[in-house]
Image 1 (spheres, chains in turn cyan, blue):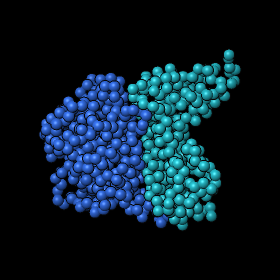
Image 2 (spheres, chains in turn orange, green):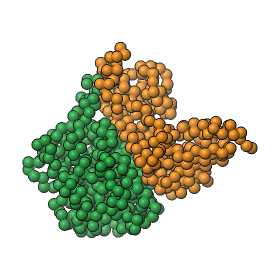
Image 3 (spheres, helix red, strand yellow):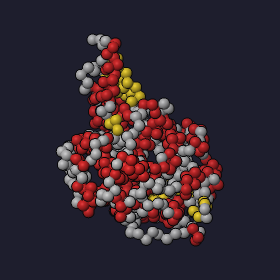
Length: 260
Length: 347
């Protein structure tokens, strides 16, 4: 079975799009935006991918999750036949690559170091990603509605959020946790969808903010380290979406005056 | 001591190392990977003028350390926090003999902390007792992702670790510096999770737990446990140099820390030789929360003086000149501070 040469770029695009669905759970960003895909080669129905990370000592569990998710995503494409995913320059490269090649799974790869699976780990970081996305939306709302009292944030619904990147991101994170998407659904909820009484709202927002700062900070650090480790990799990185914390409040207010 | 604009600061660098990562000391590829990772931290976050060559970075030696810290770096006292990493380096990464000899020669300037590994069982308990006596230990540095045979990590609330903390009590080791790494056993859970620190801090209330890198990459989890445990402190190693590359991010880290744990439990550290203290001290004294970040109060000179040295001096019972001392903040030991500032709408 051969593939027409004109089809090759289309398949490569499809493979890259599939990799775009693979997320670094800790940083809550696609590996394609982070510059973690070092090489993508499509030859007929065969795909070879090499991944790279910011340091040799990035967590092996996260490294494995991303690499095995990448392999799964490519294998799931209807046209792929042989899929090879390899992790480069990591302290566990040999272990992880052997596990991936043999489709050994998490336990088969890490043997005595693995107990059950990595689903709990994945869930923890999906929840953190949701918390951070929620804080971004609510803080942005506070900054554009200075008259609003913070405790009223506990009553904000999806319909109250302005359309845009932050709201879209929140809805995706909610979907990942199985939270409702109806316009009247509360925004400020825990991972089980429970809201908070007004007196708890300020502290919950503070906690959510520290989660968001932590994730944003890690993302900046990891992106910078990748660029230092692999000169030229900056061209493979898509700038991280603006987060409201880095937009000066004064700038937002000025903007508001101009538009009102 | 550092003086600027009429203010003097007593400087304690609470996390320094004297390492040897030269090729002849590397046991395997991981020794090279480890120092390369450190060198990338160094290159990525240092101002260009402060970047060392790779060869300089592999090993500094005591003489250079003394110059970088005490002649050039304004440091009054520094604390060795050696990482063992015996699986990566023949004589370990942190050079215990050289560092402890240096501390012995300059007791006014240097404190030597050592390490232990609970996976050494009974034998390790005896060694800890002997080390405590030999080095006169007040503190230990623990790296939870240390490799040890077929194990690549441990948790502070493992039963054997608790036995080591009991010995710490017995021999007068009060300051437990904890550095989380990428591996624990099993790998199923988040290796950087700080819940185990929470557990032991509750059970060993007479020990101080200093969480290095202020819990990064899990700042939020660290802040939360530290509000509940008055004996949990934050070390600023690795967070400091963000002042240069990402000052607005550093402002948020510091703002969060001051909010959640307060000014009395944060310690300055350069993480020498990953970075040098001179530029960090200078910039920290000049640092201020950007005006538009109205969710955080401005940092006061008194807070800077505590963070740069007085907090660690208190913990290590160092002799601080009378005119450089400050009283405690007089706020509750735990719990979020400035709760009214949680309300952004008021700004």
